[in-house]
Amino acid sequence: MRKVPANPFQFGRQLGPGELVDRESEVAAVKRALLERGKLFVIGPRRFGKTSIINVAESQAAGEGGVVLRFDAEAFPTPQQLAERVVAEAAKRLAGPAEKVHGWLSTMFRRLRPNGVFNAQDGTWTVSFGVDTSAAKAIPNLVEALDGVDRAAKAKGRPVAVVIDELQALLGAAGVLAEGQLRAAVQTHEAVGYVFAGSDTRYLERLTGDPGAAFFNQGARLFVGAIPDADMLAFLRRAFASAGFAVSEAALLAILDAAERVPYNVQALASECWQRLCAAWTGVWEPANVMESARAVALRSDPLYTQIWAALPPPQKNALIAFVRERGQRLQSERVTHAHRLSSSAMQKALGALQDKQILRSEGVRGVVTLRMQDPFFALWVDSIAP
Ligand SMILES: Nc1ncnc2c1ncn2[C@@H]1O[C@H](COP(=O)(O)OP(=O)(O)OP(=O)(O)O)[C@@H](O)[C@H]1O
Ligand SMILES: [Mg+2]
Image (cartoon, rainbow, N blue to C red):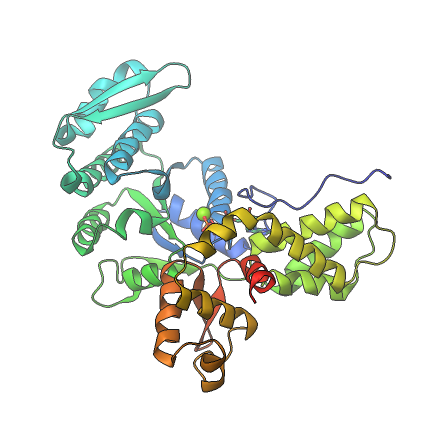
């Protein structure tokens, strides 16, 4: 086998500086919010690259002296644990020498009566609160923690920002009261920039766009959509050419089509093609080869897809088959509902449930709303198993 450069397709991990295709303006907007005490909502479907954009902006902001406290709400089983981590991160990043932290904590976060324990091995803190930490108090405690960060930021004299990724995991279940409590705090914080990101686009659009919602007009909104074809194609073309692989233009386009332009899926499929090209291939790589690779990638998630599928009630299974076979077109027409054994209203209900389960997502482009698969490879899998 001839020697080829390392696989240039990075998927399944967030990208760092120099690895993003396109996204300059998005990175600049996030960086500005981080350094200039802005308030920004980064909204985009799963795996379109929100976290990667924030990563790069964070490292640029850090290079210019900013301090970014970053949290993934999805990683915390309860909001209380997030509140404690906010204080712990502040202790690590904003407080100064370890021996002064205990005093600093009780000054900045007095109302929480925090108790910090230093872990000398990695220089981190674990913090617990000496106040009521029952579930009902979790959001108020988080608000107190953020108030403390604002006080600490004023004292610090450097740009400080808080990033909360997957905001819906924190607020979605907590209800409108919690949304209002968080808004009331964030609104008054003058020394801290906030970047909130989330992949539940329906929830975030409501939270920030409904005139009656808590975060209406509370910050700028950045919608993370598809990467322009020209940029993505240029990236793919360059990467394959660098190894001397002959990949037709039609095949490059087939990668985007099969992955439905979801950046994660594009990278995953390109990576599969790359590996197959490395293994044996000598001719020109064509769309048929891309499709075979796509089916192979989809099959690799078989255990996961099987579980998702098995948990769907029959009407949702039928609606999903209809969606895949009809490519999302005219799903409520007489012909389609009849062919898939659903009434028009049952179809509508099932499609709604599939959105709630994050299997489908709605996408608005120039005034037209269409349904898309969250994971385009799941569609290939459904197509392969369905009768
Ligand atoms: N600008 C980009 N150029 C090329 N590939 C990208 C880009 N952005 C994201 N990707 C690909 O998509 C993957 C997912 O990106 P990332 O985790 O940033 O998305 P996300 O929107 O935060 O997803 P989630 O909602 O699941 O957290 C990356 O690992 C990478 O493979
Ligand atoms: Mg993310």
